[in-house]
Image 1 (cartoon, helix red, strand yellow):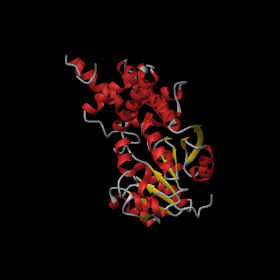
Image 2 (cartoon, helix red, strand yellow):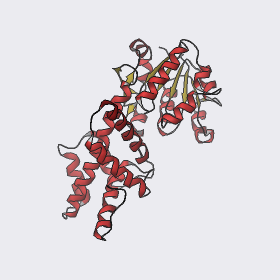
Image 3 (tube, one colour):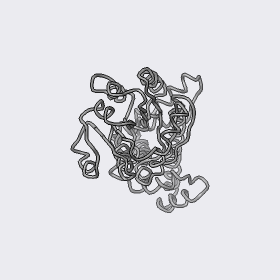
Image 4 (tube, one colour):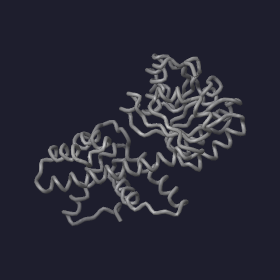
Length: 304
């Protein structure tokens, strides 16, 4: 596909806004909308063509992207007289990069197919730094021939891989996020243990990140544990949403995910402590808070 293909983008938050910016830099015409236009004036200055509704975006574009927080918002954006479905025409392609439930995505794919258009679920692994550098891991579910048509566009955002049928890209994304949460929790536990043994926290974090446990994710987030950023790369609320989706898929498959259950409990504690919008690196602080509560002889109701 050439850059003459018109791109629509609905959902211009931290992830979606930066994706749209990369597509603009790749010389694609990009039409976009979000709930708050004022936050995206910078994108308009870079060439984004603003439209008032998702329907208008769909009508203006050849390919529509969405990057949305959850099933409910996806349904709102898709449905109704101003929704994407109302603006889709036969032959159009909708690429949903949201992390939503595989079941909701499959249901939406059927609705899109009934209009003569195509839907791909294409969730991503990576955070804002990976969006900015075009190094996202993109997992795609849906029709393989449709994927082949949009693969060049997805390469502007990262490395796309065709996974399988509708919903399978999402299932793999949820599988990855289980490990992301559990690794972050295990690193926080180990760091707290080392610190309480009298080891300098920064030294311990450095050595741990350089050791065999130092995955790319941990190496990137070790600094965030030490100096928690004001702007989250991936916040607690979104991570817990993804773990709950994974637990739902596991229940349908009749399998147990014990480490996911534990991570979910700690994320509940984080939210109870007011950390819902902080980066998941805050799990270290959550464990510190729990330790302080235990030393006072109290306990947290968020932990079973």
